[in-house]
Amino acid sequence: MAREPNQRGGQRGGRREQEAPEFADRLVAINRVSKTTKGGKNFGFAALVVVGDQKGRVGFGKGKAKEVPEAIRKATEAAKRSMIRVPLREGRTLHHDIEGRHGAGRVVMRTAPTGTGIIAGGPMRAVFEMLGVQDVVAKSIGSPNPYNMIRATIDGLKKEASPRSVAQRRGKKVADILPKREDAPQESAQVAEEA
Image (cartoon, rainbow, N blue to C red; front, side, top):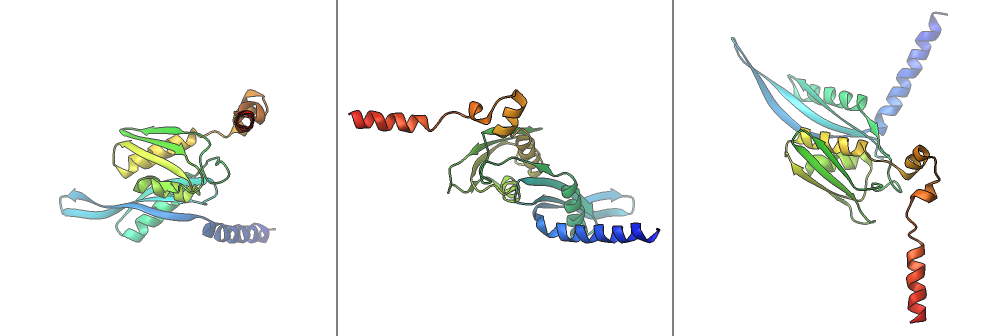
């Protein structure tokens, strides 16, 4: 009986190895940091990494170590632990315009039509690419600090709500919540025919 948990553990380890490649990661910032002691200055590195599956999940993490690769590894692990799921419209853009804040960082994110691409600054671009968003217009207003920008972006993405979740919360159908856009073009076409 003692062998079964070990075998299971081995299988779980195998699953983790299979899961790992499905996450893409992006190094956003790396800083050299120093700690002054009585023996002199001790230098280290701080890394900021964004991780995502490019299908609606994203997370960020930071790590510190004496060497750059170790700092990046720690940041990547922290990012995988802090992942959030974000509903996307048609798997390519946001459902609605949102604003995110963290400290002095403030970001505005807007939905965009097909073909727009990712119009966003450095750290925000990394978040959207790892999230799997293809069309979005975003602007950072406030702190240019990459840590605050990413936290503000994640804060905004947490507020993102899909029509299905809103309908479920309000006890209505999705069709009742969404604006009837199909009626407007038909009416304009009828008016054009009459004229």
